[in-house]
Length: 215
Image (cartoon, rainbow, N blue to C red):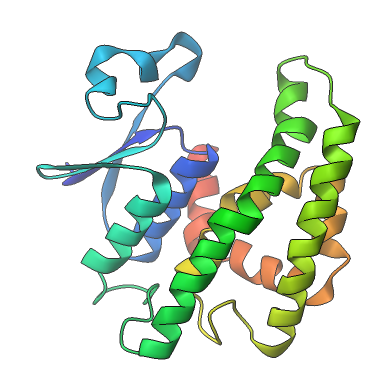
């Protein structure tokens, strides 16, 4: 059995962020599926690992971590000498830019894109009605963020420079779901953003996450 265990759902946005990172770093892991529909993530045993009752959780020996971005950063650091150098740890300038753009993802990109995915995809799965006012407002916000990305990606192949990093990888899960909605036009209408998305989403690590989830 793998020393690293991940509790979650393979295609949930946050779980797939962690799994993609583990695969990119060449780390063997065991995925322990949780059935959220019956509340397995709210049971005492799981709450002892994740007090907020969310997924995923990573266990690595006697270390238990939650929050997918923190987990991904831990994996990228612990296994920095194998797989893809997601932190650009041998280049101080690039490493600093990875930190900047991982913050941009969590603080600027994630709020509007997660709202759009919820309104345009998740609500429909549960028979709820999309709030068009929210869609319009969040589309405008995400569009402004993506204008910044378009300018950045005009000058660099990836967000932190010309090498793929954690800054790019953290964007994959929610963007994957956004591309299944009409709001995909926000990505497709910006040529450099579109090229960047097609590049990062086609990496073998994320493709393996998709294949395993659909197996």
